[in-house]
Length: 178
Image 1 (cartoon, rainbow, N blue to C red):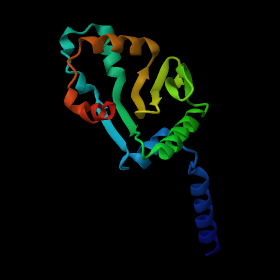
Image 2 (tube, one colour; image 1 turned 45 degrees about the vertical axis):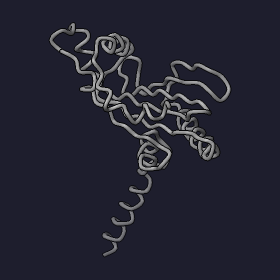
Image 3 (cartoon, rainbow, N blue to C red; image 1 turned 90 degrees about the vertical axis):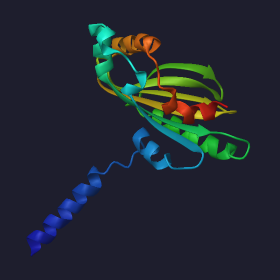
C-alpha cells in the first residue's frame, strides 16, 4: 500500500515537473485560433501548384524540407487597440525566448517586422516572421519543416516566383489587408 501511494505521488510530481508552462508560439496559436479578432490559416506546400518534374534537384530538395505554414493574424480596428497592444506584447515576449534566434529586424517604433528561427544554422525546424502595423494589426507566420537551412529558404523563394499560388487558401488574409 505504501509503495503504491509513493509511486503515485512520484508519478504526479514528475508529471507536474515535466509540464512546461513557459509560453510558446504553438501555445499562443492554439489559444487564439478561435478568437474573434484573429484569423488563423494552415497552409501546406500544395498551395504552390508546382510541376515538380520541372524543378531542379536543389529546388525539389528545398521543397521537401518545407512542411507547412501556420499563420495567425490579429486584425486591429478603432475598438480593439488595447487588445492589439496586449496581444502584440505577448508575441514579442515569446520571441524574446533564446530559442528564437533573430535573423533580421526591420522598421522602428510600433511598426515593423522580424524574422527568427528555431534550430541550428544547418537544421532549422521553424522560421518565424512577425510583422505588425498599428493601423492593420499583426501577423505571425510559422514556416515549419525538416532539415531546412538558409540555402533551402532562398531556393524556396525562387520556387515561389515560378509557382501558381492557389489564392483561395489565402482569402482570410486578404481580408486583413483591406
